[in-house]
Length: 83
Image 1 (spheres, rainbow, N blue to C red):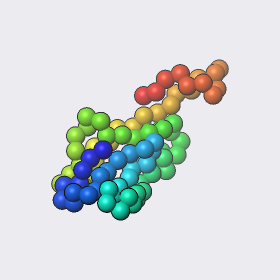
Image 2: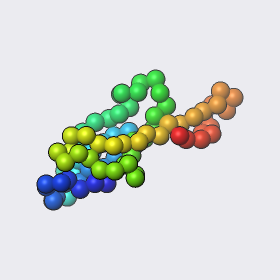
Image 3: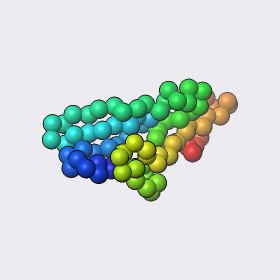
Image 4: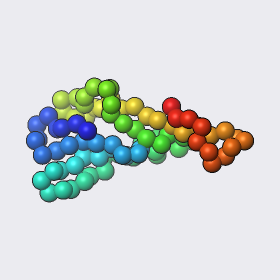
């Protein structure tokens, strides 16, 4: 989660492949982007903000990481690792 630089009631966060804006006063959640549609043929299961830094001052650009699920053909349905 990251606070907005100018608005003290706004938080930015991720869940699964979605990026959200959250207003802590009125409890409104706004979906800003779902990254799943950007990688339709890839096994991306999450985007996140860990130690990647912070968004630009105007909150237009964000350093996000992604994670993918890797399945073996022999064990379909079993998660063998994430990247």
